[in-house]
View 1 (spheres, rainbow, N blue to C red):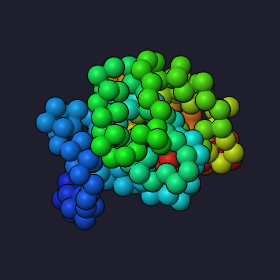
View 2: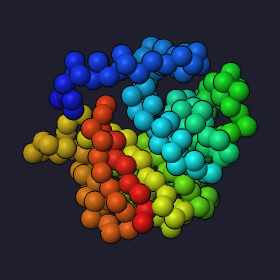
View 3: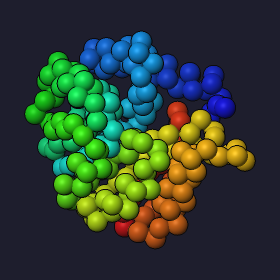
Length: 206
């Protein structure tokens, strides 16, 4: 199921030029390996959000080989992004790309359970959730108190290829919907959904 008309998405994607050679290399690798990356529409979105927010600390849950983290790092003025993935090969690849992009000093890299790693950090200005979909709700409940005042929470795949509209839901879809409901009903957050790519949830801690 398409979230938006595919012609509209293609139109927007063609408008979103990427001149950074490292990002283009990362996109090529993602498509070659059929590796899930947020792609340039979401990349440009989180880049602009970061420019506006000017955060000191960004923490990612589930970084893969660093595509979204690279967009965050490019936008940082004086801060850092914490990348995490349970696969050492992904983190090593992320380090290679960040080195090519001269962004190593803006990043920290960790191998292991993303939630356990993130829980070591306080005063998180942007929390990016893109790890196991079944753990989204666990993630926000665990890390709520680690967020700074007016922190932003960004969660990817919130519309899950349209599966959120189906009658018979698999476990991952149920968990995504539970997380989404929690965010919209939680009075600690102002929450909205941006229906680009696979759906982005954006929330601000009050």
